[in-house]
Image (cartoon, rainbow over all chains, first blue to last red; front, side, top):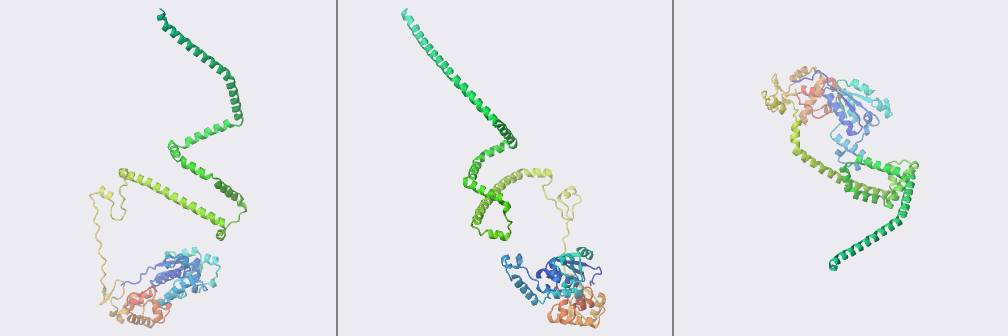
Length: 158
Length: 324
């Protein structure tokens, strides 16, 4: 009979990409970590900022070009509308599996006690303010702050 | 007597005739010399004058430099190189002849002119490049360059094949001679660096301490369920048989997990058990928020740390299914 070990594990996930298919791994891993009783936070940087930007979070796309696993040749994947189509298809199959949307995932993570942080430099680069971000985002931090928070944590880069 | 003298007279005649011939030749030679000397003198002086003239033009300096150049070339090239050069001289001459065809020279001059005018040329981006390909001359030029590239590639392929043949020969030689050399260097066998299995050399060095044979690993048998108070638990801490669950068992497990059960807890636990009976799978948190109409936050509050695992243990269910 194994109780949950008292020593707290800690994981820091860096989400640096803003594709629909690129956001989910970070969010699912974070959620699974929380469910396993692991202290978790996600650091959203660069294109990952889109995942926590109110106006962008519901319109994340799937990039087919240059992705051999997508099964769509790069030359076709770059055609106009392909991204939107792929995102639509992926969202549909996620709905069929009753997977939460990215917005819902972020809500669940917040409720589960995972901390969400935005990268200060990326915010400046993309000219975003705190008001552009979802309310679940706890703070805008620097790379140095990230390391302070991640002390003793396992770091996952996605 | 006159009979005896006859052969002598004949001999004398012959000698006289010879003498006359020689005298004549001598005279002619003298004549030739007297005639030639002024000519030769003139020629000599003219040649000297010519050479002096050349000297004035710095030709001898040039020749000296040329000799020096030759000497340097000698220093730079081995006889082997020169022999090879001799073998390929025909090809080189052919290439030179081909390169100095008037058409080609005209083209080179033209291209050089373009480079001289490079100051006036505007930088070209990728779109400019695409646009430029519409020009017929550019298209032709591209075709020619592609053909040149094709041939260069072909030649490069042939060259590398030749290189490979050469290295193959070297390898064969190494195979014949290498074993002995490697033995000397002590690299005849790759060292085994795996933990616990001493390398062959170490084994040879210490034969008395022979390495113990690695014990065969027992196949990971399914761990027997732990029975506490007549209730069987799996190795993961969940109830071995969900049907064996009773309310008091749930309370006991909750105590071990440090959870004090309230009505709120029981609502979730009972919903989870019902859902498991209905679907045959242990509900995960997302499923529970839907069927028990609680929030994720509530679940983390009611069952701290790992809510899904904890409540499944208390409810006597297997590990929750899925990632969510």
